[in-house]
Length: 407
Ligand code: NDP
Image (tube, rainbow, N blue to C red):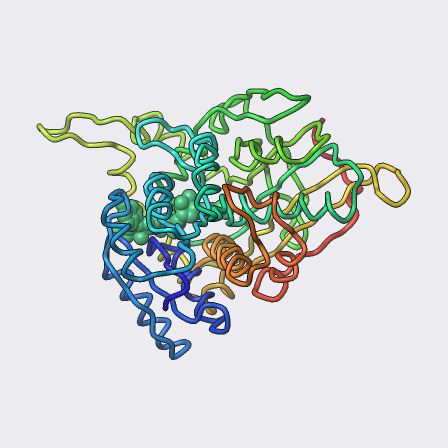
């Protein structure tokens, strides 16, 4: 009986499939299904070559609940890992409920016609998952995902009370293309062109988008890779962490962008290429951002010549539980693009997302993460997950932080 069904066959799904295949004692059977079956077959070939294991492949339209239910009933997994796109979250959750199977994803639901993401749509499924005695785990990639787990770990083991959290996501890699996005271009561009928000004293504070001349940014000296310009950005884990980390006064998210990336994106936006509504082109309806996606490099294929590293982590300030003094710690992971590619044929952004998704599924299958209902990962025990990060390819470090962040 296959234990895991992976939906999607892009950059992240490739990593999830490879990592599950490396742990046969937990994932004794693996199936992968996506819209384009040839991509699943390609992953199957790679896994056969690297591990000698066979995985099952299937074609599915994950917007279609009936098709999904038929697939799940045939494959009979214990958990579905959704690494298709955020548009499919609700249909896959509906199918999991109908077919009585646990669910895990790495990005929260977003409707196609508005560039807006929030948890309310998926949190509304809590009672349905509870009634069925099933668990749905939301946002189990790196950020969201590990960035939430770092907070939960600090809350459980280090602090009496956490006051400030700054999540810093740096990609200091070079893929060699003039312009490319590191995960699905449509989702990535929708995320980074929106109004920026952070949470302070119980309210959301809005700031201009990263493309504006008055956006908020500063240079942060990252471990190993050095100084990189880091931009304030709204990111989905802020919503759940603001709710689940008790006593929190402020939480912000920062991401590095190169001038080259910002200049390209500014021009694309100015000329209308990032629009998400339909425009009429020679009698045909075209959505510019989807057309743009078809022209940009496929993030799943970026790994070939990618060099450099990602450094992603949390700076957390709070009252130390031993002596009650205020203290700041920095917990982070460094991941190398070329090493990720050698191991699983994918760059570090896909790797850092896919490994936590595999670990989350492993926590459920081993009975370490239990419960019924819809959970963000910071609501579950962080300790076994933190140990698994060290063991399965994303080792982390904790240091004191004595540097300065913007007020
Ligand atoms: P890709 O675009 O590379 O892959 C998406 C896959 O989903 C493709 O194989 C695509 O099929 C498939 N798909 C899309 N629509 C459907 C559908 N209707 N039915 C079946 N399959 C479908 O994206 P990534 O791998 O880069 O990202 C995957 C997910 O991971 C996204 O949700 C992204 O937001 C999330 N993510 C999360 C991060 C985190 O840290 N939490 C970081 C990075 C990504 P086809 O090949 O036919 O297009």
